[in-house]
Image 1 (cartoon, helix red, strand yellow):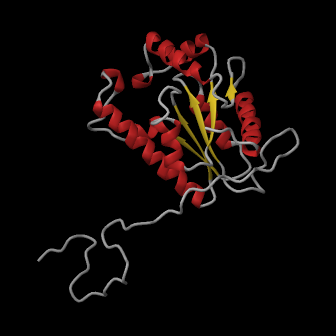
Image 2 (cartoon, rainbow, N blue to C red; image 1 turned 30 degrees about the vertical axis):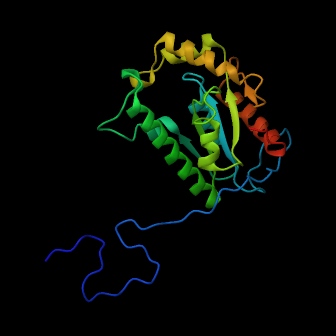
Amino acid sequence: MQHAVGAPQPGGPTPPRGTVTGSTGHFPLPAPAPVQVPAQQAGGSLSGASHGPIAVLLIGAAGAGKTTIARHWADHRGAPTAHISLDDVREWVRSGFADPQAGWNEHSEAQYRLARRTCGFAARNFLANGVSCIIDDAVFPDRPAVGLGGWKRHVGPGLLPVVLLPGLDIVLTRNAERSGNRRLSDEEVARIHGRMAGWYGSGLPIIDNSQLDVPAAAAALDRVVARSAQGPPVW
């Protein structure tokens, strides 16, 4: 007789009470908690050494540079920091991938929701193990329930949102350099950029990186995060 993988074998040891059997098991996470106030070095840079882990949500349209800047910021911090890209996680789905460029529908919407939950789970897991994280996503101000509200539910109230909003001409140029399903039409880029402009007046910190290279934009993000951690915006 064959037995399922991971199932207790006849005559074998009995799992302790409360143990979840199976091939993966269950690892409960602590409840989300607000991030701690980071310590600052001279010039406003986060030292990353004398504070708890922090979680940043970098918001921006396609072509804003958020993924590149988030990766650079995570690479150069003075504390363990993870970069979580929503698009990367969404594209983990290979067979059955719902490409929004082929038409936005319930399948692409469901895969976005699944990717956001997965990113939120990963962020909480990193934070619970003392690792800071930065998530990048195109969050729209006119969809609060599934945007910032969703991220607050997935990660916790200590998440620090920052908006990256360069000029439309910059975004169009960067988008033209993309390939595959990450390259959008000029019309779609302009529409998304226009919706992102709704963040002005929201109270969230906004970085215009039109004239900033990647290191300079990451340094600006560093300063914004330091200020936001000391007086988080209400969102």
